[in-house]
Length: 363
Image (cartoon, rainbow, N blue to C red; front, side, top):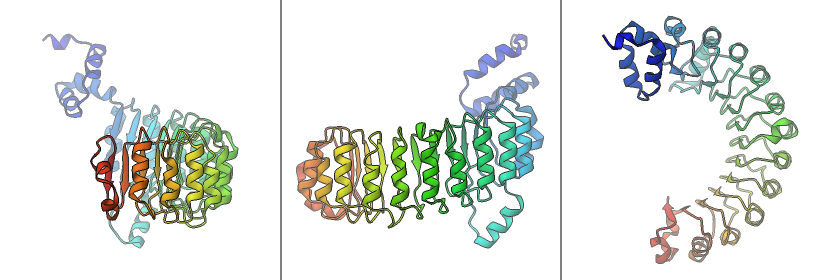
């Protein structure tokens, strides 16, 4: 009887103290009032069956976060935006099924969200802050331009493996004035012209993390523009291909705000770039040189004495001697983690292998 006297506001305060999802579900099953209060205070939702949205979504008008890894139609996206206009986090990272490419594309072209659906969502949810669209293959330049133009508070945008994204999208993104994180991994249509657009607009003053891994049309000319990203802290250039050389690498090394840098599988990055990095990037905390076969111990040893370096990945690098490892481990006071080829293990002094302050990971 006592619980029946509680008003909706008191129940809402109680509900805020319940973090476990199963406990919240149990709360909602007590009675109709508790069910209604739980639905009105639900702020996040993961949808496994988008076809059922119209049946339950109207009871959740205060959602802030919406997630679905399944195929979702344009009409569904418009319905979600109209029903839950307070959404700030949209996570549509797609989980691909195992099927042939022809079958996969044919089915998705018929029903998956495209530029029209993304535009409708951005129109209805003007407070978007974080948007994840990884592997949504129907999303292209028109949708991205609409999203960036309408979502004025957008801080995080993941377009990884959105194969319809081109330099036109980057021209629109370059004008964003609040974006902090941009993931363009596997967007293979991007060229140097797109990078120039990113680095010449308002984005250059806000972007802190940029991922352009596997964008193999990028060359040194494009990387030269990234010097204009005045507050960039994390950059991933992994597997961008042989057109990235020391010319672009040394341009990147001039970005003194960098904290994390991934050069993995850039076979034309050599000791020249590594030496400049060690001498100019004083804030660098993590460096991945996996597969950089032109990089040797002579360049890497220059990092001995670096005051901020914490993580170093050296698998595939040539001529990494035990002496070089000893200089690094003993000379870098903050070094905590190194990844090395297993074949080098016997050359590393026993005293270095057994020390506890820096973990050596052999792969």
